[in-house]
Image 1: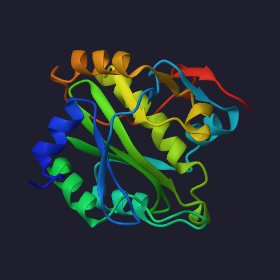
Image 2: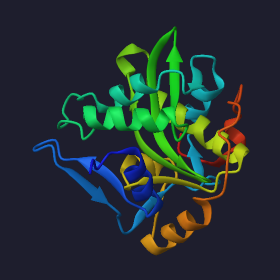
Image 3: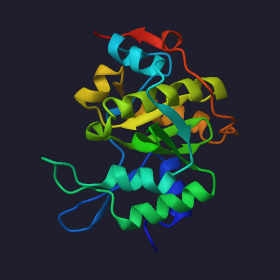
Image 4: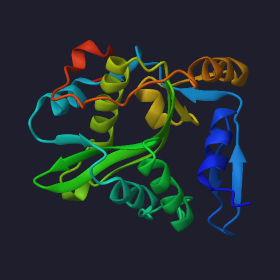
Length: 217
């Protein structure tokens, strides 16, 4: 059985598992970490500099217009980093989830160029963030963070319950991500995964002051 066949992926996500590829040998491994990292939808921390970027007209933020380009950008090798865990198998598999309306991209554009974004999988009222990227060399400084702010705003307005970000990192911690016990995450997942939720219309603007706690300058 293809480990990344869409129905296999969805069944795994419904039980708290997600796949990553070992770039050294191409093996697909499955993870269900304990603790689990989530970003509380009422706990996003927005620095004053990020708030200014969100309020400015520097970026246009859209959803689901260039999903494949976003996932390929997330999978591109970055300077000083190891090979990505996102290979062509993931691009094709998540592209199929996107065509089914179950995977979404948030895209940050500047002057007609894609300069940042993120993608993830949606099961009912639970959104599993997979990866994000920025292209500061193209004017996309903080572009992935801006995409995340818009995502949180959208998830709140459509009634989502959980934003799963899988593993903690310094980057995500500065934005308000926290670790919770796996059992607590699984309870929230079970409570929300089967509740119907439409992705809905994308917002035209975001007020960062309405989204959570102020972060550092």
